[in-house]
Structure formats: C-alpha cells, structure tokens
Amino acid sequence: MKIFTQYLVLFFFIAIISCVPKDKSEQSIEGTWKSIGCGWILQIQDSTKYSFYDITPVSCLPSNKGDLNEIKESLSFKNDTLFMLKGVMTHKFTKIEKTPSICNSILPENKKKDPIYNFEVFAKTVQEHYAFMELNNLNWKEVYELQKQKLGITASEIELYKVIEETLELLNDNHAYLEATEDIYEKLELTNGEGSETSGEGFTEIGDFEIANLVSKHHITEDMTEESWLINWGKMKDSIGYIQIKSMWLYADLNIPKSLIKELGYVDAYVKTFHQMDEGSYIKKEVEGVREIMDKVMDDLMNTKSIVIDLRFNGGGQDAVNFEILKRFNDQRRQIVTTKLKHKSSFSSILPIYIEASSNPYTKPVFVLTSKQTGSAAEAFAIGSMAMPHLKRIGTTTQGALSTALEKKLPNSWTFSISNEIYMDNHGNSYENIGVPIDYALDYSNDRQTLFKNIAENLDADKESILKAIKELQNNKIFSRQNAN
Image (cartoon, rainbow, N blue to C red):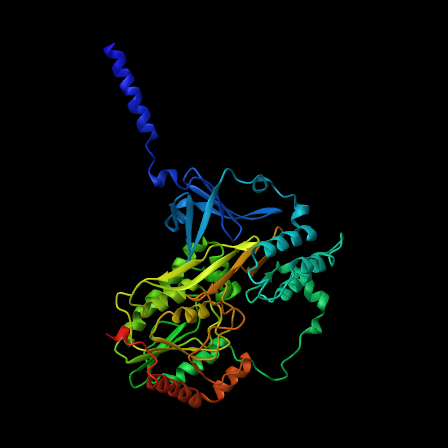
C-alpha cells in the first residue's frame, strides 16, 4: 500500500509539472502567423527557420525565408500576439491554425504569366491595403471594373503593364510605382518608338545632390564635413550651426561587390543588394551608418547657439534613419507621431511611435528647412519635429507623401508598391497630399526645377532669407523655455 501511495504521489507531481506554463520564449513563436495589415504570412518552423509570404484572397506568394536568427531580435511575444519591429514600425501578428493551403500550392508557369491573374493579384492588394481611397475620392469598384475590362482573354504583358501603370495613376498615390522585368522595357521601347522621347532643347536639369552641394558650399562658412557624402555640416554664421541632410538612406555598409557597382552603378547595386537581405537587418545597418556620422556632427556643433537642419532637397528614404537623427535633439522618451495601417475594409488600431532620449541632447533652438521637394521619410522628420518644442520649421509645406510604401511582388516577378499607412501627428492630423506645416513661410516655388534654379542663381539671397527667418522667430519668442532650464 505504501508503494502504491508513493506511485500515486509521483503521478500527481508529474501531472502538476506538466501543467506549469512553459517559458514564454518556448511557447511563443512556433507556428503560422498572419499580420494585421500589410498582407503577410509568417511561418516559423522548428524554431530555426522562417518563411514570409504575401497573401491576398486569390494568391499566396513566397517573399523571403532564412535562418530564424536573422529576425529573432526583432520579434517579441505578448498575450498571444507576435510583434515584429521593422525600422520604427512594430507590426502585429495573430496566430492561425495552419498555413493557408494556397501558400503550399505551386503555381503553374502559365498562370504565373497570365495577365488576368496578375491583375487580380494586384487589384486585391490595392483593395485591401491602399490607405487613401476616401482621401482621394475613389470608388475602387468602379476603377477596378473600368481597368479590368481593358484586359481581354488574349491580353499581352505590355497591355498588363500599361493597365497597372494607368491604375496607379488613377489612385493618385504618392508612393506608387511599378517595376517590370528588363524584357518588358525593351518591348515598350519598340512599341513606343525610339523618337518618342522629348529633348530639353538645351535645358539642363539640376539634380537634388547637385543643388544641395551648391547650397552647402555657399552657406557654410566653417566646413566641418568629414568622410560623408550624404550629410554636410559646419557653421553658417557666428554660432549658428548648419546640417544639410541629402537623403534618409544609402548609409548602410552592405559590402557590395565592386563588380556589381561597375555593372549597375552604385545606387542600383545598393538597391539590388539590400533587396536580397531581411528588411529588418538592412534597416539596422542604415541606422548604424547614420549614427556614426551624427556622432561626429553633434560633437562638432554642440557648442553652437542654434542649428539649421536643411531638408529642402531630401526626397526621403528610411524612417529609422530620420528618427535616429531626430533623437539627437530629444531629451526624454517622447511620442512623436501616430500611424494606422489599412487592413481589408478598415484600419488597424492607432500605433504610436516613440523616440528615446539622447544621452547628450541638443536642446537649444533648431530650425528645420523644408520645401515641396522634402518628401517621405524627410517629411516624417518634419512631422516628428512638431512634437518637440525647440524645433521650428521654415520654408514651405512639405510634399505630402508621408505613408510607408508597401512593396509587393506579382506572380510574374514584377514589383509594385502602394501607400498602406496613414501618418499623423500626435493630435491625429494627417498631412497626406497637403504637406507638413511650417512656422515661418519663405517664397519657394512648388516646381522642382524652378525652386532649384532660383536658389542656385540667388545663393546670397537664400542664405539671408534663412537668417532673417531665424532672427524673427527668436524675436517672437515662440520657443518653449522648458527645455532650456
């Protein structure tokens, strides 16, 4: 009887132990997860491998896979929800019972190339994820039916390309693009004819980096720029610092093969290289690159009385880059923007974005220069500055293209993107299409080349207008004094 009792006790002890919840890291991420917004399926197998899929009601296409260690740092688990940090955005995933069967089926080659099927995949993506139907007064059902009827049973790849391009134009989407395979562009050239391109009749366009370099060379009286082609810095006048940020990407050290750079050029080689990486790992490298430069910038300019940040020629890049820069002027953990993602017929819950405090923040007056050429991630810097009382904006409203670009691949390997996010300030205001507001207006043309030409031909006047704006803003005492204490 004693032996029986001992066995009974042992049995209950084992039963109790087996009922104790497993460590969260063990019970957490194994299985299949579906994102809230973005149309992603994440499959985690054996706690060692991951696979990403792009899913719509009519398709499930593999997008990326690899060793789980590549993305593990970006994952966290809480209350049955998986969180993935990509750049500055934390995406939510809910667990599903199993991977949808459509993800396990292999598409026949003829279906991969079928124009009608490819259009349907494109259309379902737009229907579920395009964020600005209401803002742009679009009836998607009408647009869809109008565009689909242009593709007959015998539609060609060229016809598909033109219909998708035309549809993206109708969306009036600031982040939309379509990238086909090289053979399609060759066919388009033959279709359009070699003489279809118009010449500028002697007019030479001024590039973003070209005008930026002209301005920084003129406006900086004490140049401190060192080992950087993307950020120029120094003193503008007396104790006024100047930081010109030309781009919010291209900072990562990607170890691009020299042969690839020779073949494609640096920027195209850079794009091809990062597209072969996990997105989170790539963005982390961008942040590391800009952090190294900004350490030097702030060391050099910390003793100035104020700083000008020139974003007038910055078309954007990665939000994580701009927030790494913005962080240098932040003295506390701070919510700077809110976002929401288009998800089927509705939107996700509001997602706040925070930046952490700098260990040595610059809290003296900062003046951010913007124009209609300030776009995307550079606008995110501008909208983030609205939450920081010692940062003020000078110039004109920005471009009004704040959403993140959701990139997708079609079955035929073409790539496209649409805006799937509404970016807002802390009061819930969106500036899509209208641009982030300014505190002091300067007379800048909205036309890109007119703006560049006017500044290039009047560099002295451009600098004087900036200095005048700074003086008037300071005289008006619009800066909060709380950060100066």
